[in-house]
Structures are given as structure tokens and as C-alpha cells.
Length: 97
Image 1 (cartoon, helix red, strand yellow):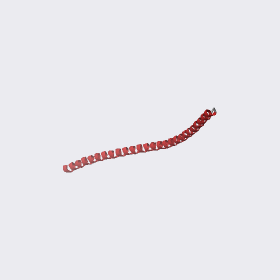
Image 2 (tube, rainbow, N blue to C red):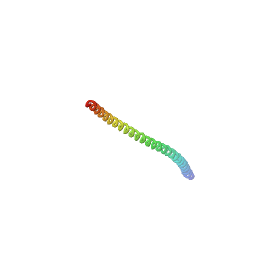
Image 3 (cartoon, rainbow, N blue to C red):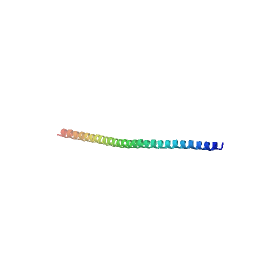
Image 4 (cartoon, one colour):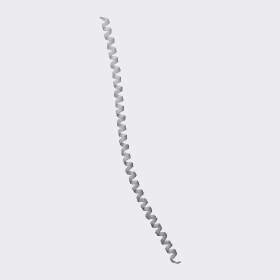
């Protein structure tokens, strides 16, 4: 019976050693998974940056286009007013003759 506790302790230690090996392998697998997740996150980050830049370009283009359209509308109104004033002057000149 003197060997029994020693064998029991050795058996427990061997079991613990095996469990630790399994845990280490699990940690290695987790590290690999984390690396893969980081790669995917980096890829998504780059895609998001591209989309942000593209959206900003679209916003700037829209604002520029709206600015041109507004400016053109103002110029047309100004020209229409000038043409109206010129037409009135011509009519007055014609009446005065």
C-alpha cells in the first residue's frame, strides 16, 4: 500500500500535464484565430477608409455642382433683369422719336 499514494500522485500529475498540453494547444489555436481576425479587421478598416474618402469626394462634387447651379441661376436672373431694363429703354427711345 505504500506505492499506492505515490502511483496516485503520479497519475494525477500526468493527467495535469496532459491537460496543460491541451490548454497550450488551445491557446495556440486562439492566437491563430486572433491573427486571422486582425487581418480581417485590417481589411475592413482599409475598405472603410476608401469608402470615407469616396463619400467625401462625392460630397465635395455635390457641393461644387450645387454651387455652380446656384451661381448660374443668379447669373441668369441678373441677365434677365438687364435684358428687361434694356427692353424698357429701347421702348422709351422708340416712343420718344
